[in-house]
Image 1: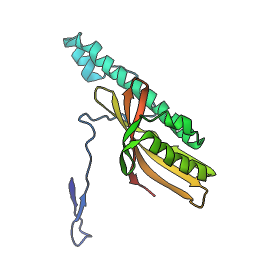
Image 2: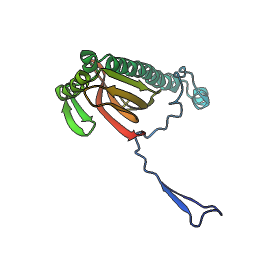
Image 3: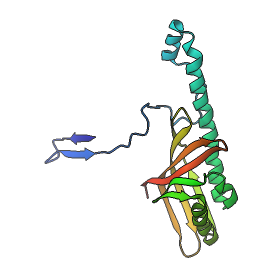
Image 4: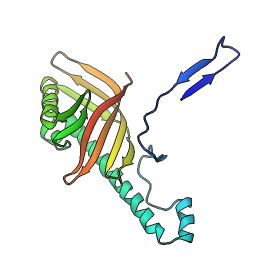
Amino acid sequence: MTRRLSSEQLTQPVLIRSIYEKISAVPQWDIYEASPRPATPDRTVAAAATTDDAAMPAANAGVAERDGAAVVLRRALEDWIAATNARDIERQMDFYPPVLQAFYLSRNTSRSAVRAEKERVFLRAHTVDVRAAAPELIFQGANRAAVMRFRKSYVVEGGGQNRRGEVVQELRWQLTPEGWKIYSERDVRVIR
């Protein structure tokens, strides 16, 4: 997307170019709410109910399933952060499948490689403090996969490598027979 801004105070127009990655065909406008909305019909669904009552249960079932999954994933994020701050490597590894499609800059990364990296960081650090803002969630594949993005601030101190900063982090989750697992972990943008 390109935007052109003009002003009498400027000698030439300013061009702003933005590139967006489309991660869902359906917009979700309620992603920043503190808690999910109850599964109540909105005006569009209510209007449809007057003409086709059989469609209503199916529509509400999909919304309820997504809202239920959103609650579970937000709780999973809290648990993942708590395990990170506690440097509990066993609990951390419970969140990952045997192979991750992406782990920061690497692809098709084994859980054992993820574990080795996290152990390396945890063993050197005397302080690990990670905090996350409320996540944005976009569901895909009939609510069996989700892209979660959130602002993460971190402080890792010790071992001669003190790091602190803030990023937009992305976790991609997939529902498996063992529950929701992180199959991709990466930073989308460095804030500071």
